[in-house]
Image 1 (cartoon, rainbow, N blue to C red):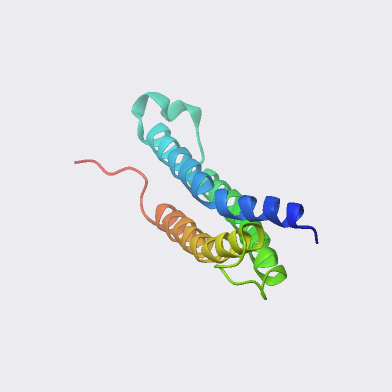
Image 2 (image 1 turned 60 degrees about the vertical axis):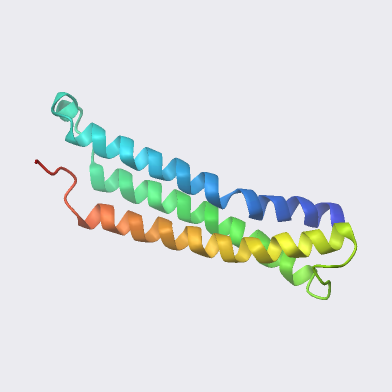
Length: 124
């Protein structure tokens, strides 16, 4: 595989996890607020179904980023992080992306499951 393609995959693997998790988190908060707000109760938003959909979409995106990172890491396995800029940098970011995407995937799954299992609306 060419270094240009590996570099593109490396950036996909590096930059997808964080923003996808953040957007899924904000959409989940918005869904919970819409469900718990008495004025929007007539909309009939299915809280658990929306949360499952958000969690599944985010998990698939992060798994794709994890796959891209793993592919780049495998293709540059014989390269050291301290090597010349293109291959060394690509390998370094691929290694960092592997760890980061695993963490983002765990956060997405754990918060999604907790949101679905717990009650959506708590009155003080």
